[in-house]
Length: 146
Image: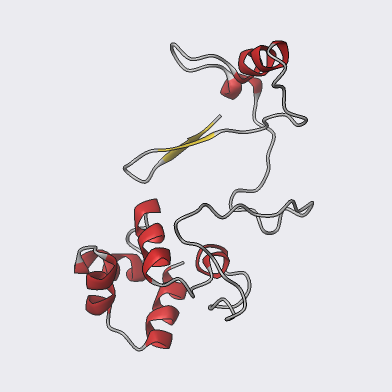
């Protein structure tokens, strides 16, 4: 992603300092990301996409498609963008894998996915599909999969 950020800065003809000031991050963080020392956080990416709504999020995060969204495509930056159902895994942020059963066990004081699904089926709210993975994003930029 660091190369794509650098390409975006060149395309916009802006400096790293101007970019940092625009998206509200420390100037040093931009140089660290571009140099590959740090990876961009969730907050960093969302700020970039809010301040540059024409920037294609799939290009920025996955390197897929064009750098900019064409003028006919509209993305509301204040509402979530959900990908369309796709049988291919090539456009997924995280490739699908089957998790070992012990990774699906519950957190202390939390219900398991199976317990939650069972409760939903008894209440008549069972979805037509099953949860295969839950990803928890932490404010320090790390994540954990279940």
